[in-house]
Length: 369
Image (cartoon, rainbow, N blue to C red; front, side, top):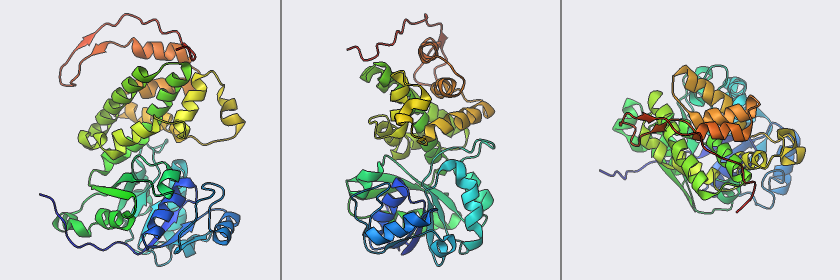
């Protein structure tokens, strides 16, 4: 039964991280009439944002709405806030949580808009934040969202996921997930609510790795059949990992899984897809992005996701292949030939079948049509 009940949005929110996605989320919130403080680690960036009313470093030409102010003072950013969105790089999440802990108002909900798995522990990012910030409910915002399109108010959908406590199930309209979704809702931005935080996080972490695989094959000269196969089988890897960790398989077919993966694998606007494409074209990793030190989260996640898969004994052959190419010096052509030569399996998963597959001949066409 659908439920439509009164709910109140958060009116004062903090976004930590003034990159493209953090700025886009701050724009969405401020455009909807919320008071937003956008924290940047760089004082010069915060000053420039306030002076010019745009983030020229990451979203040039996109005006910032009234109600959005930038600061590099973490205590100021968090004072009197009702909810916090963390949009800093996933490898720095633990340090970010430690830094914000002394300044965080009691009981304020935390939403993570970064994606990944902590490398040393194998923790999902919500587990990292919950460990460092006890007493704060932790959720996530995830979905098929390119920052610039979101900031320009193109129709965009995303999932807001939080664990639902007993009182949240009694009054779901007053849950942190519903209140944050309402805070973000307006114009072209349409949020959906989920109580499956694990499933949402797994989709967000794994999709970056699969996108690199799609990019590698696209750059090597293969086309739509190959990309469709990698997307579909990548979703299966997501489902199995999510289910093993306590999430729901169906969550992965939603916005935060299949939706995000489809977007990320469809355009070199995605740094993950772009990196894979350049590697598939034979460009050495140090020369990718014209030699600029671009952070690609899927490159980091290729290690943490496969390490986690090993710990919980989940086979993830596409992620393993990307990890081997990026971090073990594996030859791209040999690695993908081995992936395609794996035993023939069944769909659906419940049918137990394994047949030897003849070793495929997969010469890389490198752009041949």
